[in-house]
Amino acid sequence: MTSRERLLAAMKCQPVDRVPIYIRGLFVYNEKRIKEKDGSFLPLIEAVKEDADYYQWWPYATSWEMFFIASGVRVKEEEICLSDKPKKWIYRTSISTPKGELVQEYTRPEGQPGYVTKHLIQNEEDAEKVKAIPYQPLRPDVSIFFDYEKRVGDKGFIMTGIDDAIERVSTLLGSELLAIWSIEKRKIILELLDIFTERIKGLADYFITQGVGPVFDAVGPEQALPPLQSPEDFEDFVFNYDRKIIRLVQEKGGIFHLHSHGKLKAVLKKFAEMGMNCLHPLESPPMGDVTLTEGRAILGDKVCIEGNIQIGDIFTEEPALFRKRVKETVEEGKKIENFILCPTASPYLPVLNETALSNYISMVKIGHQLGTY
Picture (tube, helix red, strand yellow):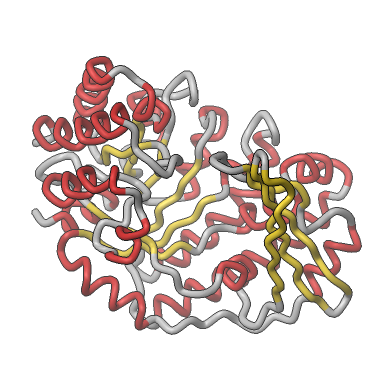
């Protein structure tokens, strides 16, 4: 089988010749992105080309147009240096609306992950500003998709990320205000979820009519999982909305891939009932709370499981122990079937240290050697 055939068959829960192997977060057939990577990634890129399978997302609009699912969003972005020793920056985004300005601030210390220190919605007035942003349906030029598809060929496919409504609402509010408003101002949350879901459905329908597909992707359910939100909140904020998007895509012949970190056991049955084709990453303890075998028993045989090698283990685990872990994961994945071997996340550091590179390559090689059915 070609990599494209293998991955698509696995996501449709059809027989494959071996366990597919996907290294999340690498743009292996995108020369521009490869040049942007540190040289420490090059041996891994070559290993993926030789022995792994591949897909990537495509950038169909600016980040804020994709976020609001609307054209013509008026955005101003500033970079402000807070200090030189140590270096720290604030990236301030201002969005103009008919009811006033919205501001997000993102702080990034040098050499560390950044974090949002001010969310766009701080109060009910800000929520009204979001709803007042003029809505011009986002209808991107899809020629980029077909250019990417041509570049990748039978080595994989191009995935279309449309995300879901809770991902956007959580980003607007932040997790703390989302939790508070889920009790005190639930109506506003549901109104925003309604707005974004309808826009996402419209965008998905447009893409499908333009021949884009077959795989669509969303992240976001992890924003409304226990313990931050209850199983009932998950049903109201995720299940009731995501299943509408998933059904639309599947009714038109598409495949739906869903990403969610976290402890999923309490709501995993709801994930299955949403009807997605593939779930990533289904984390085992201690980061998650369900093994691959337990997950298969709950999800049934109509959901492909993609995972579940912890990204932290790749960067820190002693290589001999890591190789043992990968072998056990491949064997368990083969037993449960409909499985894709994949890290739980993209590489989060700009340079691969010796341990990370060794473990990544071991994962690819072991998956290729032991994954044959």
